[in-house]
Length: 301
Image (cartoon, rainbow, N blue to C red):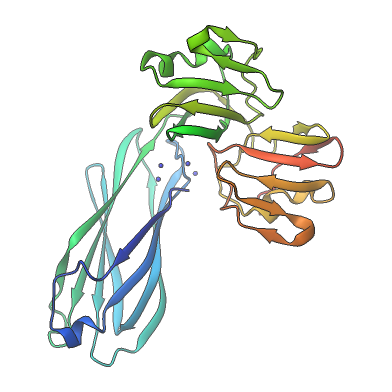
């Protein structure tokens, strides 16, 4: 089912060991993205690591996979020639299967062979380490950036009282405020709360003074659990384990949807066929404006 799809942009090339200038000019890997699916894997999920990017003037490229304890290692080998024959995108995907609960690192190493020494691979000085956590069934870890976050959880927590649910964040003095879409809020510094309880179907705005995580335990919602929407604006949770593009995810309310937004200012307007929201994923909340009351059921292709 790695930091919620995790997405990392890597620019590779200049930092590699330095072959002669003529060889250097033939080797370039750009816009490399790494993702771990699901973005918040549980012990019953297959964990899939994927990497893709752009490569130019390369003769061959292949990958080897190895596991060393909790390190999942992907080694990518690149052979380039003076007159390479490959120019375009590359992509590698590996299913690591079900992993035990714990902390893991998806590690990526690049090796290259210059055109004047075919098959003599040299390791780049760069190593890319993408940490992620495999959680137990019925757990959720919501990662929070400093400042405001629009979040949700895919579980219905056993403890729904806001002050109790937020106790871990208060213990480290990280929580500033929690707000729901009714305008109610919890402000621990003022000992004030008028949010009745945490509703796992809804999204929440949360302000923290440092990067941290919110931990919850409870029962996971089914992906097709209906979420009642009121006319106008709503903040909602996202349940499916899969990451889904916005036009697909909102398909079941396409006739009523006016606009959808994420917590980073991206939006989807179906009437204008415009979308720049990244694929929807667990842990994120979403703002939705609809023309009338309707039930949202997330669509998974």
